[in-house]
Image 1 (cartoon, rainbow, N blue to C red):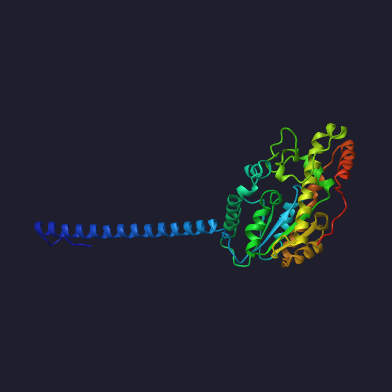
Image 2: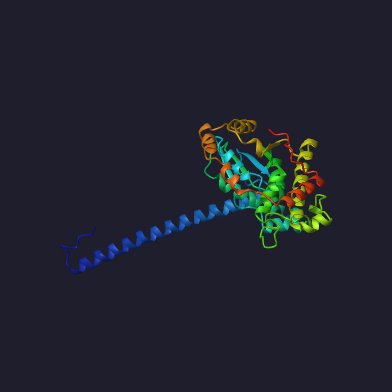
Length: 338
């Protein structure tokens, strides 16, 4: 502080000028420091952006290393939301159900309807892996990332295989099965393929709308029953298409097409109805069970609401559905599970 008490007028003016000059000098120095700091931050941001651009152009993965990844293949209404909770009962697991980016909507249309899977791969890879990277921010090395989304098998399985596993990252693909009769009942109850339903070609698709490069050899039946029960025929054909995609995964695993870092396993939703069986399932994936979380999960009685939903069709529709399932060889029997 400057004391002007014992100074005459001229001296006061001189001291004030010196003080003001000193203050302006300090202010200018502070401004210069702030400008320099902003410049350093901007330079760092530019360097990071250039590094990420270089990595993308040269197909260097933008995801954090030191993690393991689990993805679930399912048709929708097969219990993937419950499976997310199951993964959440393992220690060191970050479990996500249909996280952003969901890879549906315009992505599904571009890949499956327009047939631009190859052309859209760089953007889809950047988008999906960028979202996963953001989810993993702040989590320690060794965290297992588990994602349950029925979009995986539709719109980003190639990203998982060619951008993750191809770099040597450990990837587990878990194929989730549910009795097709029950899955289709649930899909029908929610209005799938109804004219007023917004999900068509957004998070599920009609096999008749698929681009020829994305077809799995499934078509909608052309008979009197399918004409009368057109919506049901669409739902069944969609599930038959999904089954073909699952079979394709299994063939690629068995023939060695997938990189060695990819492991494929199967689980039936119906087998995850006991604490003991869920524990065995998690251990089959080399995950450590958190017994307290697992007990809490089953104390919530997950089946009580499902029993009230009554995913039922009319008796006539049930009979037609059974016939359609048989024609596509979609059996209600259990698959070999973990």
